[in-house]
Length: 201
Image (cartoon, rainbow, N blue to C red; front, side, top):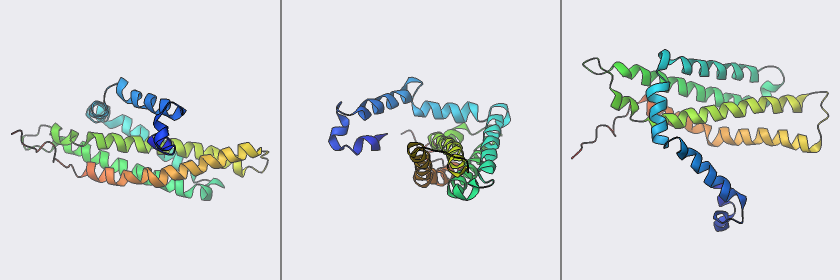
């Protein structure tokens, strides 16, 4: 990401460093299937309400199962901070999704107020993306904690450093990025209509 470039200073933007190519490739991935705005409208406008929100329920159930798995036995204390962060983010996600889906029948005439519903779709996309990445880090952390806690472990110094690095990076993500899910969820759940309420003239 951009931080990987910035650690090299101005030289990070030159072809002397491979992060320049990686960052350009990553940016291109956001464009190939349409802009983030289009993707967010598709996510909230079609995928979330489809089949009465079945995909959302399946996602939430799977994340909750891994949260419960992370709390078990020896790994529980080792992963408490990561697990708590993902669990909290899941709660924020469910709260925001429930509020948004509930708003689909709030117009006086009974028709869905789609402008208001989709007004903060980009923030919802960010919320969902952060939650899913946090979930992936939790799954990796479970594997790392199990490897480090195993009594029969014969980890090499490199493997030991690898697994500890996984846990450290997961903690970094949960502390810095996953913490933003509360703010994003609050905005989505507020059904803020500043954008659609703007007058054309």
